[in-house]
Length: 369
Image (cartoon, rainbow, N blue to C red):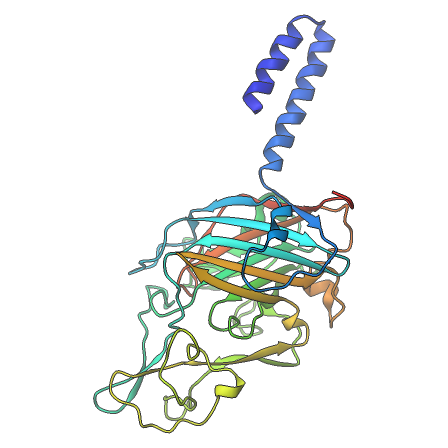
């Protein structure tokens, strides 16, 4: 399309004065830039009725044109990693008076729910299955994830995307003057800058039909926050924790063998004290989950994995009003505004993820379109 426009304007300009030619070329440049920008733009379309979250593409989603992107970059190459090296992601969006919705699909040939499960050993001990990489992160017994990062007020995000807040160690092994061997730390450059982080976790939030609502601020002191600038939104209860007694280093809950339908994580009704009648080789879930309450539970999510593809529907209020919402949440309050975001997919990985260096933007279609 852009090439055809260039040829058209070249021919058109041949019959006009130099001033007119400049005007034509400027117009061509504007249209070219618009076309390139449109390729990275997600348009959210107005609907009248609320969307039911079920991880299925009902006909209502035909109203929304997909933004399709390829994620094929990674922060580092983990030792022993065997996951996908690229994936195609389709993102659609709808909105109504109160909520904004997203339908996201991406290729992933494996449904990864074995989150470092417990396995009973021949001698009767319980051992968690792990195979950490060179940085201590897990890429074998972990979960599939997807993250969306939205700009709230961080300078540079609109042109650099998530990279503006992801900091790698320098040649000396330091991040922000702190010796650091891990592959990346998230924090913003200025005290008053934040990003909104939505993280869907197939195991830890999949069973509670939520995404983990987090944010990034300027914290660079690991003593103040173990994950530096990445923090959870205000929470009043719920969440996920290890199914482990620290004193004995063994599971404390579970009455059924691990399976990918019911027992990959233990919800409130499944958290019964362990009675160890299990056999060697049996596995138990290593995670206890319950729904987040408070602002950290703002995002509803429903997923479905079928034929080598994840289908994920997300729902959040366009404008949130929880504790510290203006700092922790992007507010979709102005339909005329452009909202910038980044996207990443984790295939059975704790830290290693696929991303694109491109910056994506979302616009709301005017009423009636």
